[in-house]
Length: 107
Image 1: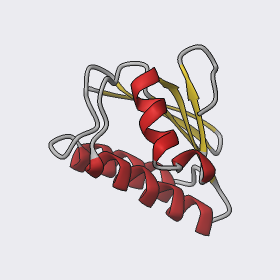
Image 2: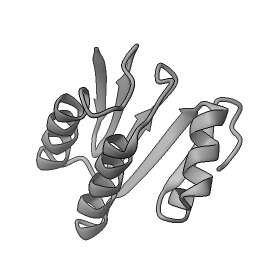
Image 3: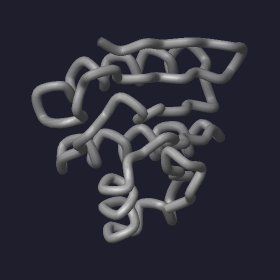
């Protein structure tokens, strides 16, 4: 399940009980595109309910970042597990958009 909340030009997307892997990427991509097309320029992906992100999920987040960046917006990822934070740090994703962990730790 994906929980979406909106407030002005900010949207928070929280995949709950859903890993961001190849099988879930199409649904999440649809949600992300929808909020951007609907005017959201600050998009936050809350990973508190996510335990795993694979290469498809990373590609989706990078594509969302690129789309928002072109429109003058920003993507942020919050509440990432320590494993996901380590992965993002290894891949240097934190250099492209804001990434923080469950305890506020920045990746």
